Length: 420
Image (cartoon, rainbow, N blue to C red):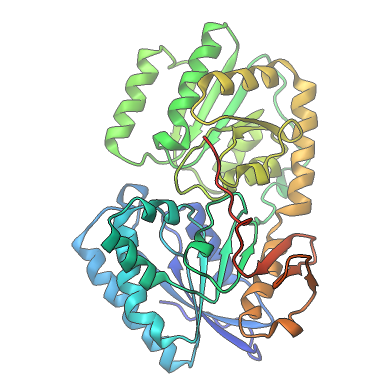
């Protein structure tokens, strides 16, 4: 546990309960940015979850996780009563039974002690998951999660998880990242005949790894010069064996390199050496895709999918290409276009970086987060920078960066679900 006081005169105290790295996944890294932020209107206290220390242990049952659950609960109550904190910020589980059951226990035993509850749906799709569960489990979950004061979602294209639980307000706040590319400007990339394609993320089938391998095989059959670099940790030993078998079976050893997990300069160097970023995800919990923002940050054109919040990041035919999910042919087609047209790669990459600077900076994100978190205890009439929309009982908070936070009563329009 670490208590993080961000400003001595902050008006609002907030308890953040959530995992920070390791493992180095998007949700944990964004929570780390939140608890380390220097806010002026809120004071953050943090109870760190550490149910998983690697991707292979995420979502799996271990007895030690039960012990840790009650450790987290005890630390939450210590801060609640020791520091007089009345607002709980919590990132609900994604669509998986074990972490959902963990949330049911933890929230069921703790939320009655807090005046205000804020959910941040960093993993998407719990509503779709619960709709498929037995009635008793679904009712239990709705009781534990039900009726938060504020729900934060990363994209309006994601499932409307906040509405599903009857959230009093729902707002959309895109993730934002610090500009890791600044030390590497100007971007100088190899202009040789071989085009380098990069994938970064946890290595699992529904992140599109198999799709990328099959697309690479299609490109190989066309005698195209390319190299695919895959950066990340395998979700399981079984899946690692499956991937290696497929690479060998397609004779792609000379075309695909697996680096394992990389961080810091070693990771950024991969972005610098790449010409195209490919992320054909259809991951059930995918809510945003920070690696797409990283790619745009580094002037890379992107090939990705029409899935969840991804189209909010990548503008099709402007900063890259989007394809239908689970389509190696579609991915190969778009990769081929970018391989054969270096001028298009350059133009899309430049537009991607401009989009990052305008929409997805860390400052933009944290400014929006502070306004939203602070608004929980402020009547709508005095919410700062509010703009009243045409829809009744809906307000929007305009951050300095022009990212719009749609904050209001649940509505049918929020959270439209993507067709496959």
